[in-house]
Amino acid sequence: MAYGLKPKKHAKGGLIRTNNFSGPNGYRIAATAPSAFFEGDLVTFSAGNIVTDMAAASPGAVVGVFYGAEYVDNASGEVKFVRSIPTGTVAKEKYKVYVYDDPDIIFEMEADQAATALTIADVGKNLQIVAGPTGSTITHKSGLTADSSTKTTTNTFPLTFLGSAELDDAYTAAGTTMDIMVKINTHQFGLGATGVTGI
Image (tube, rainbow, N blue to C red):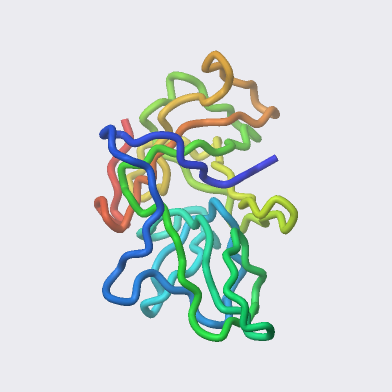
């Protein structure tokens, strides 16, 4: 079952942590959520707010990965922290968002292995995502997966494939999903939407 992007380690040995910093007001989602948000979703900026960016197989510049949000419930006035937000949920004011925004974080995620399987020979290549994922309102996890059949060197592809995350670093055959390690290639705080050409 897909779970989106899950932080695993830091490429330069730094700490893995979420951030809310971007100017004096921090990362924010509009008070009426413009789409559903799930833990592990890719997010970006739109008109100064954080939005999900997974409608296309190759999103533009990515700010990072959504972890959760804090808001004041519009009905009860209670302060809540959530790991997913249904579309159209109304808060009293903008949501305060926590994002894994460090471009050097390495993530684990699921590759679909649908048409063409990833192999060890593909390490260093770039991948697209399967566009338009649906998250789970039960686990609060993203439904985002990597599209294995798109493996190539194209610099604008959003993910760089770093290897298997399966037990004993095994690789699965086409038709069997596989956990993989990736780095965000088109990161806003890295090289932006142009990314790096794969190997």
